[in-house]
Length: 446
Ligand code: NIG
Ligand code: FE
Image (cartoon, rainbow, N blue to C red; front, side, top):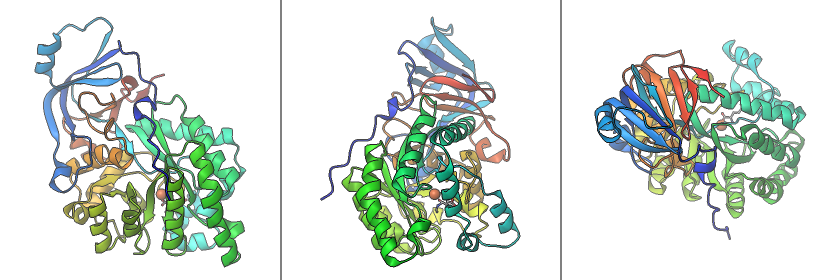
């Protein structure tokens, strides 16, 4: 019998909030755009935003206290700053909710740029993996890395995410693939993120691949699934993971193995998320719905019955169009069909060294718009509210509304459209995380 799911850590305290007396306001914004509410949005609702021209926002003690027009701000608070209030000029800029990245693989060592170039010369991801490259090569370099080195790498990736507007994220283990190295990855993730403005929740992913030393026979492979269920997942839950994930894919973990790992994770209080239907239509989306997963991710080959099952069960589709592009798959997940069928769509970077080496959610929004036909409004909801919902934190994050965490991004441009329209540059100028200004005019503040 699965134990009751543990409550997620209070996402308000995931990064340190400033004292209640601290006030930060942004005045004279060209515009402000945000989805609204505390639950995922789908269908026509996914593109419905609250928008203001000549806007202002105020954060008190780390939480949003006012969102509206600058005129209403002046009526409420007057035109002179109150004692201790810091006022930023938002002229020419648009305020958006802090971005939420719900699928990353942050704690790894070693890069795979030569594989990238081999793919450009015609080899496929699967061919490279079969020849000893792919996930297994990152497992070797991650196992060889010290915990301190991994923590430094996590921190540098979080820094880059922050400069591109991410204020909250999920990050997975999955390059350790044994008890010692999976727990090392998780500890490195937490120590690298300690005190960092980007808040994180961790996912246990020992089911990312079958480790090389367990590949000789069916018995060895079964032994690894047993180890995941009996030892590694409980240890990762104990060490602070919030979620369990598995790469449910032809040639990796089949449906029965994936179900076992997800159920074992649930038994330790971990909510499920699933790498599903990425390379073949195996039915991972259906499995995600059956086990009550928070999200099913990738979904390039999702079947119509998988879409229906996700809609019925309220599973969020976390789509990773950067991966489609990076692997030259000539195929994207059917985002429009999913939204029309009542599935809430979120977007994530999948930040990893093999299939998507980027920390930038605006880059992903670009691929979502031009590759999957999402509107700019829909991409914003996907990388804020729906992403937060897929992590179970939409009560506290993902929109600019009074009472939510003071996570705000300013982009360079007078309207939301500039998020996608001005491409190939970092459109994010300023970032406020939990009420603290941490990036100003593109420069990280300490
Ligand atoms: O999410 N799909 C499986 N895992 C990663 C790829 C990881 C790698 O190539 O290192 C992904 O795309
Ligand atoms: Fe992934």
